[in-house]
Length: 151
Image 1: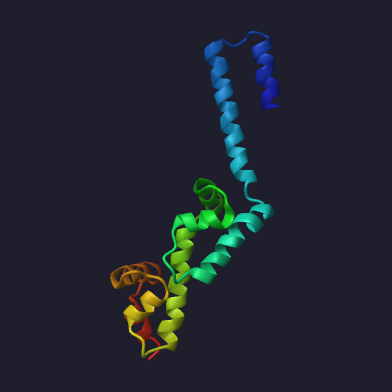
Image 2: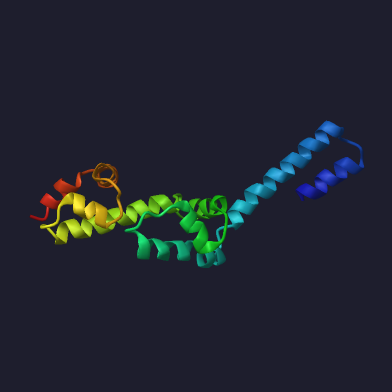
């Protein structure tokens, strides 16, 4: 409908060059807007989301980078980020951090003999301060105080 209306205006010479370029730009914006909406499909779940989530589950303890997610799917990082924003309103990296914190919570509750620093390193955080910061940001309590709930 939009295309037909624009085409008719241009054919009838009811628009000047500037107005025609505005119509073309509006058309391109509509394409982009609908393309992003249509990207959320079961196919993308199979070829992008699931492989990355499985990769995170199997490798969360390692120092993962965005290039690792690209290598899992062979899609561009920009496209992967768009798909994850559409599905989760988040990024693979944020989901990785969430998964690490969840695993850390399990270890903190079940292994009181392990230090907080040991657990942070075991779940993939490079430094203790980064582990504590990310844990507190997500759980609103430090790992040490979280552990205290279980003792």
